[in-house]
Length: 241
Length: 241
DNA sequence: CTCGGCCATTGAGATTGACTCATAAATCCT
DNA sequence: AGGATTTATGAGTCAATCTCAATGGCCGAG
Image (tube, rainbow over the protein chains, first blue to last red):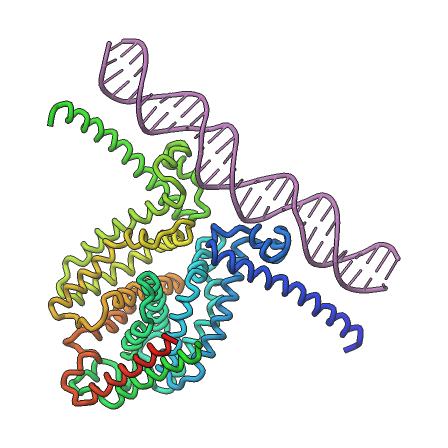
C-alpha cells in the first residue's frame, strides 16, 4: 500500500470512528429512553438531547423511530449471544450445557424484560418482515442449536424429535416462566430450570423415556446427573458475580 | 314492580340495547380495521366510518385507541373461552382433555395470530397494568387449571410440580410452536401436540417419571435429597452476600 | 301536538410528535 | 488558504389522536 493509501484509510478510519461513536451514543441514549418510557412514551427529541445532538441528526443515522428500536434490540441480541456462549463454554455434555443456557437465558430475560418486550413491537410495524427478526436472533439461537446438534452427534440426545420442536419448548417455556416469575414477586429460577430440564431429559437415551421408569429406584446415573446439575448451578452463580 | 318502574326499566333497556348495539358495531369495525392494518395502520376515522358514526362518537364509548384495542382483545378471549370449553367437554380423563385443549389452542392461535399479537401491544402502552391482562385471560386459563386440578384430584397427574410451571410449559410451547408453524409454511399441528403431551406425560403417575420412582429406592434417594438440600443452603448463602 | 330539558352525536380544530429540508458548520483535499 | 463535500441543525410540515362547543333528536309533561 502506498503512503497515500495509508493516509486515506487512516483518515477514513478516524472518520468512520467518529461516526460510529456518534451512532453508539444514539443507541445508548435510545436504549435508556426506550427502557424508561416504553416505545410510545419515548420521544425522539429527548433521545437527541441525551445523545447530545440535534433532532434532525438522528435521522441521518436511523431512518425511522422503528429502525432505531430495531438497532437497539439487534445490539442487545448481539451482546446476549456473546454472554451466552461464555456461560455455556465451561460446561461439558449436552444436558449440562443446556441447563447452563436455560439458567442464563431465564436470568437475562428477566433482567432485561422490558427491552425484550419492546422488540415484539416491531412485529406490528407497517413494513415488518418476519425474516428480519429471525436474522437478528439467528446467532443467539445458534448457541442452542449447536448444543443440541452436538448432543445428537455424541448420542446424548435422541434424534427422535425435530430440533425446532425442542427449541419451541425451550424458549417458549422460559419466556412464559420469566413473565410469571416477574409477576409473582420474582421467585427462584432454579425450580423452573430443573423442571424444564426434567422434561427434556425424556430425550436422553440413557435416562429418559418410558423405558427407564420400569421400577428401578434412583440409580447412580441419576444421582450423578443431579450432581452435575447442582454443580452447573453453582458455577453459573460464580460466573455471574 | 310498579308500572312506572316497568316503564322506566323498559325504556332503560331499549336505550341500553341501543348503546350496546352501537358498542358492538364499534368493536366489530375495530376488529376488522386492526386485523387488516395492524394497530399503527388502523385509523380511528376509518373505524368510525365502518361503524357508521362520527369520529367523536368513538370516544364516548372508548377513552382511547388503546382502550378500544383492549376491548377487542377482551371480547376475543371471551369467545375463545367458550369455544375451548366446548372443545374439551366431550373428552374424559385429564390427558385426553389436555390434548384436546392443546389442539384447540394451537389451531385457534394460528388462525387468529395477528389479533393475538396485537394484544401484546397493550403491554407497551403508557398506563399498562399487568393485572388487567391477567384478568382478561383468567377465564380462558381457568379451563387449563380446571383440567389439571381435576387430574390431580383423581390421581391422574402427579402433584409434584406447581401448576403454574405446567401452564408456562403448555402455553409457552404452543405459542412458540404456532409462530414456527406459521413461518415455515404451516406444517401439521399433530406432531407438535404429540410431542408436548409426551413431555407432560412425565407427570402421569401411571406411565412414570423420574419423581415417581423414589418410593422403592434404598438410601440413594435420601442421599440425593441431602445433596440437593446442601446445595440449596450454599445457594442461599451466596444470595445473602 | 308542542314545548323544553336532557343526553347522545358530530366534525372542525387544538395538540402532539415523527419526520423533512433549507441553511449553516465542519471537515477534507489540493 | 479556499473551494468542495460531507455532516449537523432546528424551525416547519404533516398526519393522526383526541377535545369541545354547537347541533340534533328523543321523551315525558302540559
